[in-house]
Length: 441
Image 1 (cartoon, rainbow, N blue to C red):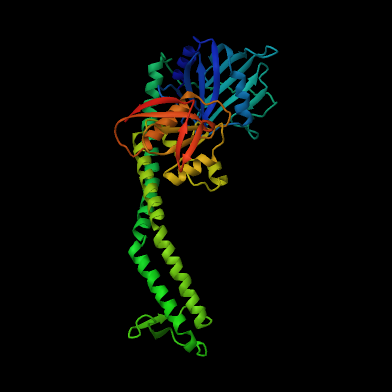
Image 2 (image 1 turned 180 degrees about the vertical axis):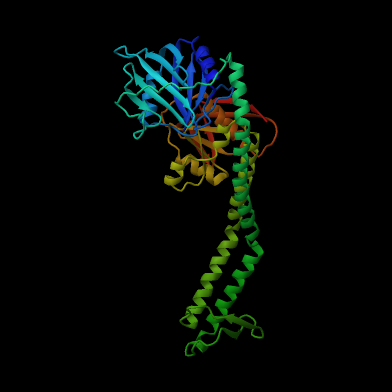
């Protein structure tokens, strides 16, 4: 962060007198709402900055660390001043919570000092209340309940010129900075999806045909029936060699060469083994269309994901389809797709069976979404009784339309609580008390 730019931002912030809220939207990214104007504070080491964007950056994670809870002090607070600590790249926001029982002043100190970035909440005596990063072993430790020493001023400060900051400048900073990051993230995500596509394509190619499975089932049944017809002749004979030739029970002139299977104990056991194999392959032939449908649906879903990622205009949109690491470690097996918007878990079905599973899994207070008059995926926002922000519902609907197999047109997405959705047959439903969103693609 350039010192001249930081001083310009401090002056720009001084025109505001109210903090609506401040919260974390990524591991090192804070969103600060000053009178309805949202500023993003990136505290990534060596890449720290402050920017604005016309897009709403939704979190893929819900942050509940002590630091995030204490950021609640900024909610609906009076902003008294915004200042920079001399020639240090530290921005201090002095504020007082409006609804506090006892009026007390606080400081949100945002440190952009190269690789030592931090966000620290202090009381008026400069006692640390909480911090994004706790530092115990340092010349300037950051420990809860302990005073924070001021950072010494640089002995030989470099000359700088204060930048005249306006919102458009901060928006341009974001565009310039994120374009490269966005393209890099897209490339990484698309490569991961292409690897999954290749694996699914291989599995599709390996699926045997119904004809081949039926033929195999008939062959095993022929072996089993032939052995059964000759058991009275074979019961006193020992199993020798790797095959046995017998005449067919239906056509005596036809000889059937029957392979001896491993671990066969007797000819009656061999007959039973072939009956079991015949039944197994007949079932495979009967159910192979389900396997084929599942793989095809998964492949189409990945292709729709690729299209959404290719069109993504923000890093947050790219990250939606990457579940948090903590979720990956603890997730239970679920027969539908999962992703996260603003830290809220979203489920979507890829086919009828997954839609049925999703409807059964959801609780009554969860939010249900579906594209009106088009056979397509059901979606559930697993929010329970938590009130959803409009941006989350709108983004979820946008993704639902993006995943739809219909490529072009106008779409209406209806949404309501799961308890107002009644299953009629399979994944077909009727619903009430709904609202609608309009989309075009």
